[in-house]
Image 1 (cartoon, rainbow, N blue to C red):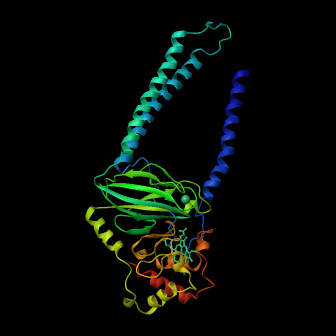
Image 2 (image 1 turned 60 degrees about the horizontal axis):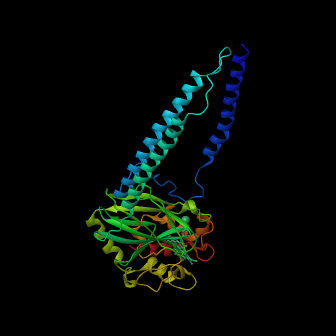
Image 3 (image 1 turned 60 degrees about the vertical axis):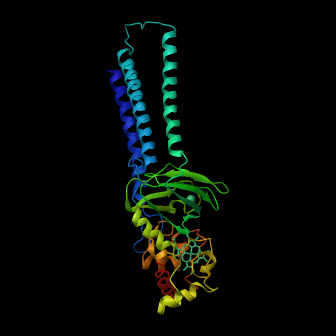
Length: 362
Ligand code: HEC
Ligand SMILES: [Cu+2]
């Protein structure tokens, strides 16, 4: 009778404790809304990328290794927990009985030292094999790309194609993409879970990662900075668009062109271009637009801004409203960004002109 009631109280306390934890947890979840005040059409939800849906040769190999290790670990877990529960119930204390007293068991000691060592050696073998396979240097069918971390956006360069862009990495399907990962300021982390493993972007040092995408995806695979790099670390995303060989050629041909000739612009866009390239705006001090005098490298290259889907590190969809909101008050959307607030520098009409110009950069 006495035992019954103490067990009851133990379970009751456990439940109350869990319930007490559940309340703050639910509250925290309910509060995790959009972290910044978003203008209309704010793109706050990136499709959450999953490591369980590999879309490249390398990610598939990593996934296979992961599942193999998970299976072995799962079997060990079930066996060990099963033996534990069996021992607890089968040999539990019985008042009238004295348990058999033993001391040491050499065979058992040898067995449970050897078995884990063998299992770990096997896992290490498979791990080294996979590491070698996903890191092998290829020379054929390779596209070289540089991914450069900035606070807080990713710059992408294609040295062999003479293309510089930002936020969106466009690659051809079934081609080995050799990525050199760098940083211009602090440490960032480069990761698109469906395509390759995490790589650190370290200032002054070049890391490399390789992936061979096997599935066309014209929208994008999601990527995210995975190394805390300051206020807007969570707003430092990127998209990887995997195109057919022909579509990639078309994309590359477009992105190799300089921006449209000034003579083709008129009205608002022409006025915006004027503003963009004058000293008061400072735009050209931080941004490059190929074919103009704007050659700044602090901010994203804007040469083909209008052909991109996202701006500001994947936080905003590239729409007229979002461009205007961003140019008006970038620090209001991503606090801490070096891009200044222009709300007091330009009239709404001038902002509209700048946006009209930006939208000609196809
Ligand atoms: C002091 C440097 C600086 C100046 C001056 C500046 N920008 Fe920026 N700009 C940035 C940085 C840095 C970003 C990226 C911010 C981020 O995503 O965190 C950016 C992002 C942008 C973007 C989004 C592009 C993309 O790919 O994400 C646009 C559009 C833009 N700036 C337009 C302008 C215009 C127009 C002006 C002039 C009125 C201007 N900028 C002046 C630094 C600057
Ligand atoms: Cu970062």
